[in-house]
Amino acid sequence: MGMEFMLCAPTRVEWLTQALDNLDTILLDHAHCEKKAAHSALKLMYRYPERKDLVRALIPLAQEELQHFEWVNRRLDRRGVRWGHLSAPPYGQRLSQQVRRQEPGQLLDFLLISELIEARSHERLGLLACHVPDPDLQELYERLTLAEERHQALYRELALLYYPEAEVSAREQVLAQIESSILSRLHPEPRIHS
Image 1: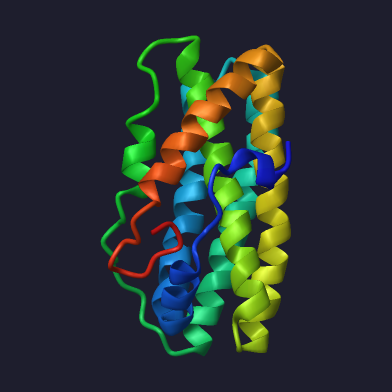
Image 2: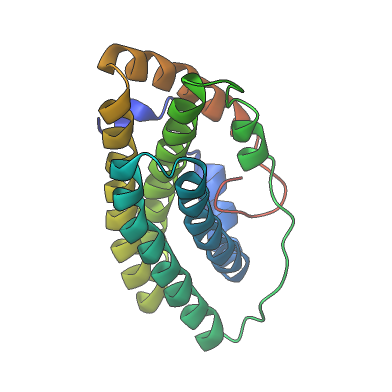
């Protein structure tokens, strides 16, 4: 499944303008996102230790997310941006609210929401790679865009390991519509997922 199929609506130009006007804040938020992505993979490993294929697939993913966290932190240091807390946009919380409380649907939702977040990250980091004026950040975003695409594919592969393709595709469509509606209004503070 390609990113274009997964996302119901493309990112609007208003987000890109806001991001380019606030690159340091976007970079700091991106550091938080990489840390959360590693945490999400670890959380799935803790929740489903009996699913050996899932655990084996998520170990290198979590390690890679932490490596990306390090890369982004290096850029923050180079730019003289101090590490700090940022308020979270409603994106992650509202997506998490869609996770069904019972199995077997719960694991599917965890995997597909992770897929969806990676798909949106792939799209947005790709936009930044094409438009950011700083060559160092451009190179960073180009590398990370490729990684986000791999991560998106991995989460879908894991979903297809445990669920029929028709069920996966149907649930993807539902969650993708919700994801697009969450982003239909631009968050006032610049964030990767705003």
